[in-house]
Length: 269
Image (cartoon, rainbow, N blue to C red; front, top):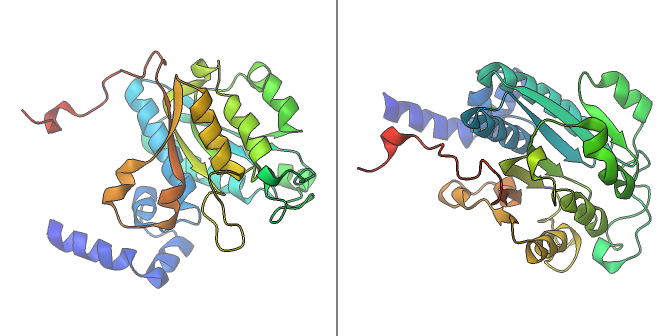
């Protein structure tokens, strides 16, 4: 019976049409739809669920999720929907914070920010319209140079377990990443992260010397106690696009980094 279920699951997973129907009509449990890839932003659901699962194992009652780059707000709305399901499954509270200038992308002129691809004013937000739609997510509006300085003091967020990096630019992503320095108590020991602009196509031609990839490289080079690593566990799984955009941030000096969380019954004798 288990083999039959696995075969059926693989067949469904490989069918875009079936997955679309399951997504449209919310067929099955949240975990079923997430594992099947039948959610509009499956990558958002994945990092939030696994962050909450890690927090649960470590004894946390509440965590936070951050989205850097909100634009029209569809990402935040998805986060609200998914975290509501996750809270029910794992009995853990999840706060949501969305960072944005509220005015779209700032002026882009440094080659590291890819001015051949990005332009000032892209991704403009209608703040008042979005605020009417949001149920619990909090908007952190302003230039990241300013909001990064007083975010922890002003909001005192629950430990951050999942982060979506969608600032597009090297300059703003670099500042967002630097918010982790000296603030390990505001994070889980391992943080599930998604970087939106590190693959692209023949126009973007993302590389290790510009954009979000450069920000990641610079952060790793300049910090010994916090490192951003590829999610190597995906190498043994089907090749799905967004798998290559997931990174795990390790806070090696976090008080809970070494806390044992594995299932002892599954370990080799």
